[in-house]
Image (tube, rainbow, N blue to C red):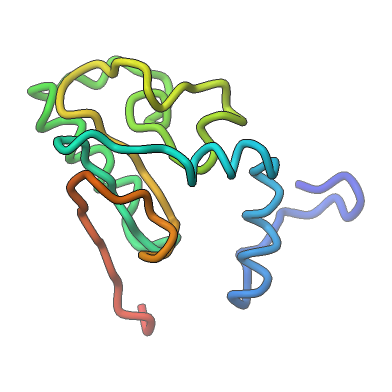
Length: 127
């Protein structure tokens, strides 16, 4: 709920509105640190457009690499959101719970740090 309207927030109704909301998650410095990240050759980047099954894919990949260990409070602790990691107090270069290291990103292909392996998830826009 918002304090100004006292009603639940609705979903973004346009790409522009979605980008405006996402901008609230990042500082310029934190976002730049995400863009500057250099993945190791074995790192996995789950690269999706928002609302295309990203969290589901994070859970699947993390479950596969840990044999089902789900001992975390929130999936971003186990699979950091690359462009928001610094602003969330996470170090993308830090060791993770298991190998390979895995990251979530909503960056477009030209922006995604190159050098790792990539899982892309897309969705029928009519859904």
